Image (cartoon, rainbow, N blue to C red):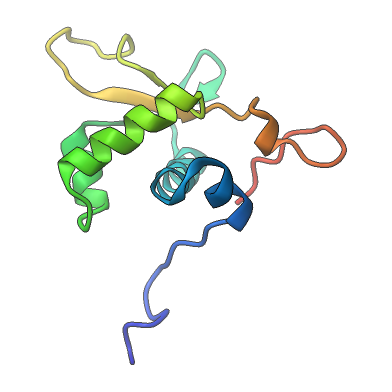
Length: 117
């Protein structure tokens, strides 16, 4: 069984899955990881910019519709902040994303924010 743990895998916190849903937790965890290594800082936050097609390349086992629905769900719940005003050209359909770490679920016991993976 060489397919088990021989390549990078995703790890999710049960609490997060129970709070926001499996698909949402998966995408949010992936975005969190990408933001940790991102060099795109605007207005004091690290952002990840992608089109839906870019997301599809990174998550090839999801359909474009599932990606759109999951992003919309995270935006609606307030866990994901998106912005397209950072694009240089108006015809650019790329969206910029960041996790809203101010949500209570991301706070630790002492009241500070836990943004570690």
